[in-house]
Length: 130
Image (cartoon, rainbow, N blue to C red; front, side, top):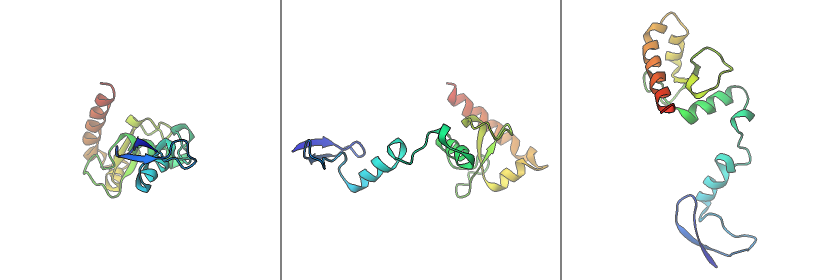
């Protein structure tokens, strides 16, 4: 028997060294986190392997908090391409907006949300390029 430290929670646990069922993590809960999320997940895809809507939504919410930059709505959040180019999936071009403020952007009421969106972009870019 050997003592290992769980890479997820940091707890120590015992396992059999070299055994076919040697544990990597301490529990089922930690195993779900370790083996089923991020790059360890066999279904994980890098940004360049993603396609369609999934690609820019995943990229956006890896870099931005999932809430509207205008009203802080967290339940329903869409992704807007700031420069209008739907092929530009750089995080600084993807803006989280609720459906209402996204519609404002694409209407004659853009002037009501543009200052908040512009300010958000300026702050976001300053954080990236620090």
